[in-house]
Amino acid sequence: MLKLKIHKNLLECGTDEAGRGCLAGPVTAAAVILPNNFTHPFLNDSKQLSEKKRTELKKIIETEAICYAYSHVMMHEIDEINILNASILAMHRSIEKLTQQPEFIAIDGNRFKPYGNTPFECVIKGDSKYLHIAAASILAKTERDAFMARIHQEHPQYNWKKNKGYPTKEHRHAIKELGTTAYHRKSFKLLPEQLKLNL
Image 1: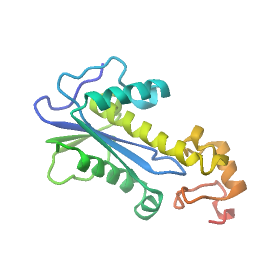
Image 2 (image 1 turned 180 degrees about the horizontal axis):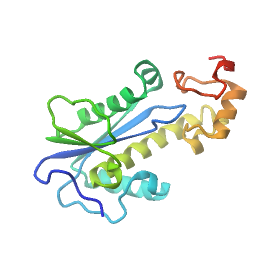
Image 3 (image 1 turned 135 degrees about the horizontal axis):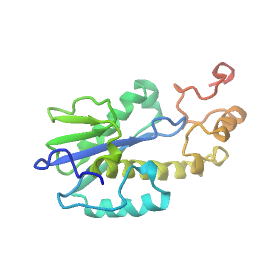
Image 4 (image 1 turned 45 degrees about the horizontal axis):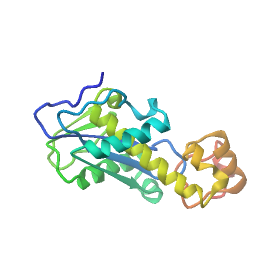
């Protein structure tokens, strides 16, 4: 059973990102503040849930959260500042968009940079320990998947609707055959034989 949050008496947001290991598309983060009476039997790390369950939970989270926000950090920024900094930037931007600013931030993972003077804690596998981080993981994942489904229409040959930009065999094969698009992260190792790829 996941705990609600780390500090019972503080206005606390959970934050998480999706798409860090992808070759194409943005890295997307979400921040969520849940009410103190929030419970849900299925809410868990988004990776443990089916797409259908994530979509159902997204609606519940958006209806019941005190506030929530998400942000995409696009490919050119990822290439400029690297994926770790881009992931943290996406979390910062999401927290900034919240209609109520948190008194404490709970982050999935082990890396974060201070957000103003707000105290924070990094929690490894936080999305399977705390409800607000799990909620953020679901919003980040569903919003990013929706973005990838939209850009799939522009470049269906990469099948982003299915692989979401991750380095599947099919995705790498399409890059090898067709080259890259504006949505590919040029700083990533897009192919094992990177030197043979004309970027």
